[in-house]
Length: 281
Image (cartoon, rainbow, N blue to C red; front, side):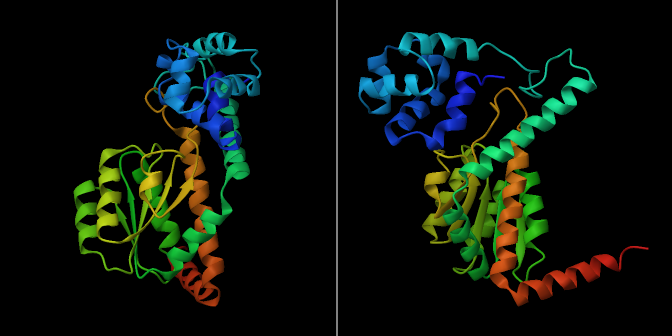
């Protein structure tokens, strides 16, 4: 199935040339508004030339800007099952919706694998390994991902705390030691409380790593950003596939930390496994 214009822009954003990516971000910031502006206005919004806008249209397979706008309008027609998934229809039965949901997750994981910045992963792992304590913050839907991160990272000989409440998170950052690390998880990277927490960490000169969306306000407020493009419009749909990608990237970071810590990490993992084994019949 051919991707809609919006999905194509999101999927290809990180592989586009820099100026074409600027146009794509300008469109994704408000797709509906992009339907009603001239090519010159879109070029100004993206701080590029009009030929750059045309190049993006042709990169996506459209002859020119008018054809692109028609396709964009078609892609904004509501589809999917509102507040659940963009990939299923209201009349789908289990035989239809089950593979659709799983296929969407598989596709999202593949895109994440293909576009993952492994240098950023290595830098984040090094910060984790050098920290006195890891403070993991995730609010709203991202609190579940943060809890999983604490479950994974908490097996190592580095204290790890979950911060699911913005006020308690702010208190923890204010009381943090200079060798502590703040790990922020936000699918959109736009949650106000999360942005405030990142600013607070910066003011206290606290190292900060985020797992968030590329080009988001959060991504530019932290020392290291592990980027994962959201695959759903979270204003309309539940971020199912996006959350699975985040969980996968947490596993990547935990694996990297295990390898970085070497024998000390192995010993800690063995002790934790032994403790868990004792709880089973």
